[in-house]
Amino acid sequence: MIHPDRGRLPLCCTFLFCLLGCVSADGIIATVGTDVTLICNYDATYYGKLSACWGRGAIPSRGCAGEVIRSDGSTMVSRLSERYLFMGNLEEGDVSLTIRQVEESDSGIYGCRVEIPGWFNDHKHQQTLTVMPVRPNPIKVEIREVKERTVTVRWTHVFDGGRPITTYRIDLKNKQASWDTAVKTEVYNPELTQLTLVDLRPAKTYSLRMFALNSVGMSEPSNVLTIMTKEAAPEGPPLDMQLEPLSPYSIKVSWKPPRPDQRNGVLRSYSISYREYDPDGRQFKRWQHLSVTATREVESVLLSNLKPSAFYGVLIQAKTNAGIGPASTAPLCSTLNEVQKTSTPSTIRSTSTAATRTQDSSSLNPPHRTSTAEVVTAATVWREETTTVTTVPPDPPVVEIVEVKGGTISLLWTPGFEGDSPITGFYLEYKAANASWDYRKTVVDFSPDQTEATIIEINPSTYNIRMFAKSSVGISKASNILTITTGEPGHKSDDRLTTVSTDTHAAASTDEGHSGGKLAAIVLPVVLVVLIVAIATAWQLRRMKQKNGSLNMWRPGGVLRYKGAESLQEL
Image (cartoon, rainbow, N blue to C red):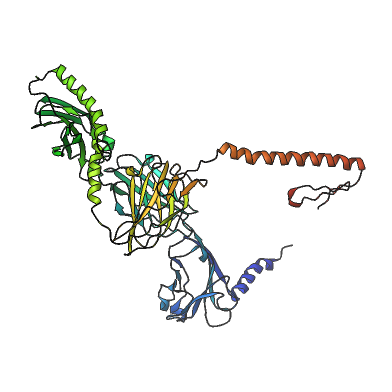
């Protein structure tokens, strides 16, 4: 039997529900950091200006729960935060809510109520807002300082996408190479805004870019910096130096440039220093100097106006705009005798005699002149020792290692007594552990108010680090020396052994234990414990079975316990 009234029941219920106040609902998805508008309108031409409010949560029977903003029909009368705005024309009935720069915590239900006079007349509109976190914004990185072997870059914090930035990644490559060949280094300190890359090559062009990472993902790459490191003095001496006597009054000197990887820039000239050795007086005479422009792959110069049958020592040094490199040396060479004709046999005899007299001259030199190369250095030191220091320079800082991960080194230092003048800065010296400080590879400068820094080692190895404080009075003695072993760039490493030395002349070293030994030390005890527990459990189960008693087991701390001849129980 069909009852026609039943077909009208849903419609009647719907009508009654709307009398009590109909609620429309929809949803919107936004990303962190954007502006979102939740739509709500009424017919102001028909109703006139009406009060309206927005709240967080489901719309209650009266008003707005968790009210965030309210309008009297013409203007906004209250709001919970400046991020909540009415951007539409209120007098035309547009009471849409705009939320500026939404955060993940803004997700949830929002309800709009327009208060229409009369019972159950209010217009109610409900929306669900879902705010999704995103990757961080790209970084804008800039160059702070470029030196021969270091580059310091800095940046400002960017929008993190709604999730905290956890890591920065730095890519560095030769300018002409692809990014696939770049050295990738991760820095696990999100508070950083500056770092220094060390151990670069002088007079080389690099490209650098950065990324920021959060739990959602990695940002787009930053702007790309093109960096050309400054020139440095050559690291290597000229090669294949040859001395050939041409007459009683001249010697021909020939050589080749230093190795290309040791030139550290464009070779501009060569400095030729020569002087006569007096075997009777057992001493060298004064230096004479020539300068030759660097033009060819095989260079030569003629030393003229020399004395007959006299021995001469020669040094050659290559120069760039940044300075002069180490000297190449050769055995003493004797000019020809005035009555002697220049010939191949005589040249050979002269060279042989020169080599012999070189050995003799070494033993005849004063103690502070053990070689021709050291004479130049000794002369420089003598000039420096004429300066009298009448004021007190600062004490050296104390340096500590905060962390070493991969190729990233975090340092912290404590300044010492500043002496007779305020400290104006610090600088760090950096060298290979098996080299002397005369061959330091890097010097990094820091401001006087800086007490911590992060540096990136491009070529993983073992290094020594020490610091100095400087003021207008002078430079402190060296700090304690740190011996640091860096790992492969781009790989996180937590087990990095580092030795701190308080000796300012030599750094102590600590050998890392073998990883195989560590693994065995961990695995073997675990295996033994498991075997013992298994044997004890099997034995006890067998005994309980023989007694035909009930078996009750407890596992305090994950280990079965047994007491006397009783059932297994918790101790």
